[in-house]
Length: 50
Image (tube, rainbow, N blue to C red):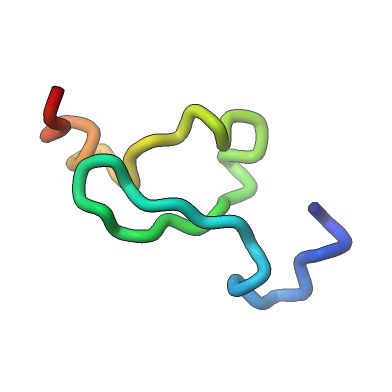
């Protein structure tokens, strides 16, 4: 992953938020848990639909 990133977010993985559908870009903070990340924000996580 490190060698592919050149400062351009277009080359980073992204996926839609499960609650609102907004595209979320990969973040270094999510590196170890990217597969479990489902929501773009705490607000979406709070207002999720079951």
